[in-house]
Amino acid sequence: MKHAPRVTDMPKAFDPKAIEADWYARWEKAGLFAASTKSDKPRYTICLPPPNVTGELHMGHALNGTVQDIWARYRRMTGHEVLFLPGTDHAAIATQNVIEKRLGKEGTSKEEIGRDAFAELVDEWYRTVGATIVSQYRVLGASLDWTRQRFTMDERYVRSVLTAFVAFYERGWIYRAPRIVNWCPHDQSAISDLEVKWQEHDDVLYFIKYPIEGGGDVTIATVRPETMLADTGVAVHPDDPRYRDIAGKTAILPLVGRKMPIVADEAVDPEFGTGALKVTPGHDPMDYEIGQRHHLEVINGMHLDGRMNVPGLRYDGLPGVDARKLVVEDLKKHGLLLKEEPASTSTGCTACATGTSAGSCGSAIASLSTTARTTTSSPASIHRTSAPTAAATSSGRTPTFSTPGSHPPCGLSQRSAGPTRPRT
Figure 1 (cartoon, rainbow, N blue to C red):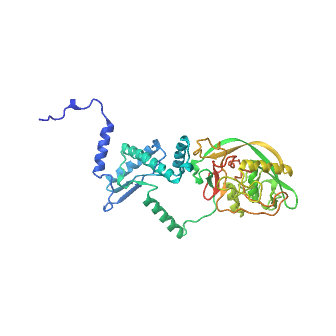
Figure 2: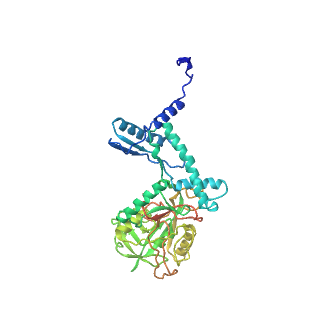
Figure 3: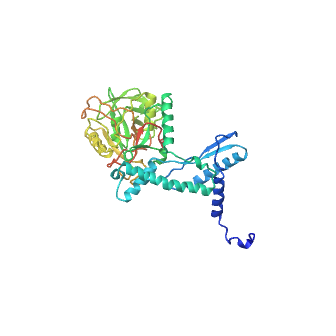
């Protein structure tokens, strides 16, 4: 005869993992976490913010998951039909970078193995890391409805998103317009502000003389002289007595000959540089805002690969740093470069597949315009056409953006298409 359990039969050490796993399995088998669409109870839904499949859960996930689980369990206790929906996010560029770094360690790349093989690696990564994330939430005891688990690349999910997008577009709720976004020439994609790593470094501030139509000139300061080719205006502060007489006049863009209005705008910092700001709406967030207020043209001066987009000029197709050297050389030749001073600027990068620190691969944050045009200007003294360049970091504010360096295949730029990093 089997005797009743005795105290001496208990294990000497309590094993919470085994006990908790057993009870969680019982709850799940009993369908305690599954929501019913046929229930007459008031409904309560929480969508778990899908964690990225770039690694395991961290303390932030554990905290948020626990708080959400408390609400889900509380609502069940108060008579609600609760759907606590689990899922994971593909994380787009972040996951791609993880896979690319792994390929780099193996001496290959996504280009070498091909699209299909790379997609298989990403899918394999999702299955492995996704399973780890699911097991971690189970260990936490989260009362998620695993019968409805989702992944942001599921076919049904993607189809639903595309269907909604088309419907919103047809109703006029979605439209395309020039905006500033972070653009990575290496990944060929817009990058979230959260993914951009900023790093301060020493640079040079160039003081350039812009002639004024009818006589006189105005001096601007910039750490990126190559960006002047995309200028469409000059801005001064309305209360700055130094420039009160030139506001409303027309400046002539050096090396290009394009005529540009001199506007008064309170966004200009009179204390930085010369207090006069070269306005490049297609390549800087603040410049874009100034341009919108004063109806300035938006010009795009950078190709998607991070090289200069200046048709007809000898800078066309060059990395930003190389173009800068030629622009400085031409400015000196025509007596338009007044002086150079040490300066500090910020370089942005995702430190993606290269595994480098921000900007150390040779490329860096700039601003670009996805829907802005490339223009041709009237003949100038040494060049016959004008075209836009990369990031405008000039007088009137602290330099915050830099252009691609000598190796444009990697690094970040910024393009007009959506909101971007606030000016610092």
